[in-house]
Image (cartoon, rainbow, N blue to C red; front, side, top):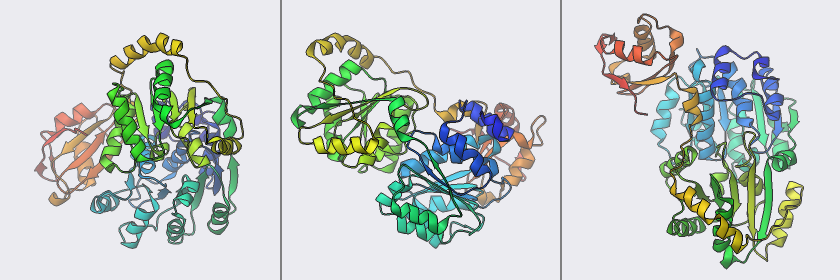
Amino acid sequence: MGFQDYNLSGEIQRALKGLGYTAPTEVQEKVIPAVLNKMDLVVKSQTGSGKTAAFGIPICEMVDWEENKPQALILTPTRELADQIKKDITNIGRFKRIRAAAIYGKHPFHYQKEELRQKCHVVVGTPGRVLDHIEKGTFVLDQIDYLVLDEADEMLNMGFIEQVEAIITRLPKERTTMLFSATIPGNLEKLSQNYMKNPTSIEIESTATLTDKIDHSYTVVKEEDKFDLLRAVTIVENPDSCIIFCRTKDHVDTLTDRLEDHFYTCDKLHGGMDQEDRFAVMDEFKRGEFRYLVATDVAARGIDIDSITHVINYDLPVENESYVHRVGRTGRAGKKGKAISFVTPNEDRLLAEIEAYVGFKIPKRISPSKQSVAEAKNAFTEKMEKLPKLKQDKSELVSKDIMKLYFNGGKKKKIRAFDFVGTITSIKGVTAEDIGIIKIQDTVSYIDILNGKGTLVLNEMKKKTVKGKLLKVHKAKK
């Protein structure tokens, strides 16, 4: 089947085409029609299977644009994942003008409060901050028709389950509930029985995903020899884009410094960094500004990049699930990837537990020979010295006919979205269908102009008034 077989609106199909979605993945094929029929679902599916689009596409299709209050709530375990899902929902719903807000901790509460006060169709957030907004009355729930619990097993592991239940009990009883998880432990089974209506179970075979697209291997190495092995492996493999996972942020800091001493184009990501810095590093890595990202498991969730060629487990993960989430960063979007693990001599039991969990033996490989390293050195150095070709973000692909305009007027001038729409549609050749997401703040407003009509609207709005006021207008910088 193709996406055109699901009776999706022209706006959603246009966005999917712009994003390069050609055919549904297995999880999308099973989930999309079920959600369109408003069925409760428990979906067991590994990372990298395309599950965000599986629930994002039908949610964007079914929300009512006219309704100002949030109609869908998506709960996630991490801020990175919340931000990623918000971007995905915005891209899928771009031409339907779907507005999504991400709310999570360590981000200004008042800013999120303002976001929720405006027209907002979908809210994505971490349980603690979502519950905070609910209890303070800044997140209105009476129009929530869809609830998604994403990475539910991780929310359980991180101790969020009580907050999740506190949120669920406040939601309207009549709703569609979807639970997505890599594993379904007893607590999640109980949760589905308590809060879902005869949920349909969907299971995507995880081993096939892990073995068809990813070449796994491990090398036994003493702790003190790991860095030399990493140098040898990266020279021989010469990856275009690689994540190196460590257990602790101290390991990440030390390893990043050592790699920079050897002139690797690299950066780091861990929970001890400011949120803004973490997002900036993620965006730069996605664009391909550097080739090596050194990270703790905080990066194993919420990284959606199609072309990571290698994942290296510099430290073997302690939790079996973490192995799956780490290696799931590669072998995405139909491409092949490699997952290479470093195992110290006393970690054989840890390796055996991971193999039992994933259901297959990971092949052992020997360290690269000095000769193979020497032969590969020139090609490695050449690639390191060459400026990388920057990748286009998915939102850029779907936004090529969209121009975001800045206006120096907002709520304090008593300007509403309706006022902008009236003025812009008075321009010859422009209709309401050419106006995208409108974001009105206290003193400024941002408006997406669709269908390649941005320049026309920009020029005309320099001489037109909005509610009797001539506003400054220019192409937005963000």
